[in-house]
Structure formats: C-alpha cells, structure tokens
Length: 411
Image 1: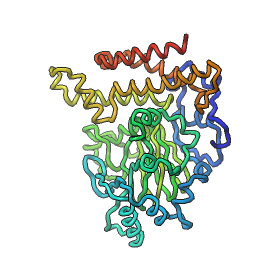
Image 2 (image 1 turned 120 degrees about the vertical axis):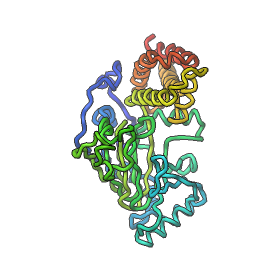
Image 3 (image 1 turned 90 degrees about the vertical axis):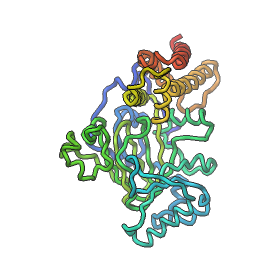
Image 4 (image 1 turned 45 degrees about the vertical axis):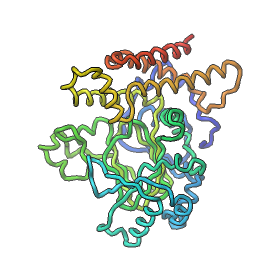
C-alpha cells in the first residue's frame, strides 16, 4: 500500500463537515509525474479533490503478477503465457477502422484468436492494410476471479462504484477491465461512464492521452451537440459544422510508458492512442469526491430523454417511462442511484456502529467513513429538492429511508 499501513486521511485538514465539491478547485495546465510514492492524503489533496490528472511511475505496478507473467523480456506481450492461461476465454474486440453510431463496433472472439491476429499483424510490421482490432472492456476479474493479476493501488481503493456493483450483481458485473491492442489501435474522444474517475495502468507498451478539461468539450461539439469522433479530424476546421471550435483549442498531452498509471479525473474528455503493442488494466470508480458529478450527469441525461419524448407527455406514467429510458441509455436511473447511495451509507453506518461497540473494524477506509456519510447527507438534500425525484413514489420512499438512516450520524 505504497509504504503506509492504511490510507489515512487527517479529518482536521479535510473538514468533513463540508462536501468536497464546495472546496477550492484548481485548473490544470500540466500533468504531474509522480516518480516516488506519495501518501494517500497527498494524492487526495493535490489531485483527487481538485479533480486534476496525474501520472504515477512504475513503482505502483512493479510487483504485480501481470507485470511478471504477461510481458516477455523484450517488453512485448507474452503471447504464449497469455494463450496457455486464458486462450479459450471469450473477449470483446473492437474494430478501430469502422464507425457505427459514433462508436467502434465490437464482436466476440476467443483470446487465442485475437492473439493470433495480433502476432500476425506484428509479423507484417503492422501493415496498414490489415484490420486494426482492439480488445476492450474485458471483465478480466469476473472471468478469472482467482488469478490475482494486480492489486488496486491505494490511491484508488475508495471505490463506491465497484463496491456497490459487487454487492448488487454478486460478481456478475463490474467496472474493472483489461485492454489489449496493437500499435495504432485507439479509443475515440469520450468522458468516462457516469462521469466516474478512472485509472489505467500499462502492463506493457506506451499510450498517448489527449485530455480536455471540463467545459472545453463544448468547443468540440457540432451544431447538433454531438461530440467530434476524432479530435485529429480536419472536420473540426469546418466552422459551419463546428462553430465553437477554436484553433487554440489544444489538448493536454500525456505519454504513458510501461508500468505507469494514469489518473483520469471526472468529466475530463480524453482520446487514447496505443503508440506500441500495449496491455493495460483499467478501473472506473466513484467516491465522495465525485458522486455529485454522477448525480449532475444523471439529471442532464434525464433532461435529454425528456426532450426526446416531449411530444408524449400525456401518456400514462410518462415520468416512469423516462426512467426506463434513462436506465437503458445510461446504465442507471434515479431509483438505482438512490440504491447505490443507500448501500454505501448502510455499510459505513454498520462499521461505525460496530466500532462504537468496542469491536475493531478492519475496513481500511474506516478513517474517513464520516466524510463519506456527511457527503451523502449533503447530496441527499440536493436530490430531495429535485422535482423529477419528487414525482417518483418508489424513489421518494427510498430517499426517506436513507434520510432517516443518515440522521443517526448526528444523533
């Protein structure tokens, strides 16, 4: 855990009586490279709370099993080991040369089939005439739960999103992924799911990251509000289609080397290119510092849904139908979001109650459970004022229950 027994936060410094998003924020004009281990509190204060990207050196990943077994001596993927261990597993593979609905279409194949393609591409010296396939969003931990490919770095362990998903879906779904791609494979411009944080660790290879701070993506949208697919495209120079684009709109570039880990803040749009044959491990995650951005994202997405079916407002239970569509388009709706908050609150309250009874709580994040709970309490007040929430009876009852539970914090 980077030289410290527990990820301790000094609450006298953090002042948990106030939600993190009301604290001072800072703009980022460069991305710091963290060559030596820092404490969790340093990361929290310098990057997590201010929502600033950073790049960690290979000291974070050097002891991982995947760093030893998935990479050959020449720094390339260890084809034979990967095939022997996981070759029969089915993986999702995107075609980087095709576009469907502003995304790269995917198909399933076995890992052995994908690695055979990849080796053949390497033998052809990455012939540009061949397909450019990219293994993306492979739920590796779900597929191989006992392998232990890596340890989540201490800086990213306060992970409400996977904590909830693990409990809700009993290991059948998560936001933990493995990516494998040849030189030239890439991911189009996007912001991460639910406006979550993400971290991405290179097991081998190099990536180029192109970052745009929150708000700058508005300059990259066309007249219909759609984000440009590729920020390298000359179509951005067409003022009739992209009237808000400015020639001085430039991304923050980060080159990530082998073993290095990128922290991607909430709401930062980014485009990623594999500069070499690359394997990486990625998580999406949410905690007390960005949960309010997840709520704002859901409000915005619901507004889009309501606008799309605004001519049907006279249908029975129109607001309920909007929630169904929100779940389908965004992966979560208001009711499940409140379930998410209630799950985190319940687990924190249980730990605190157990601790007060004199029983030692071994949860590594017990040091700032109260910060989590005060953040939840503050956010709940915002949610209760939302008119769309007030129209949903089932959501209201869950909010009332959560409110009563959080009142125990002050009792």
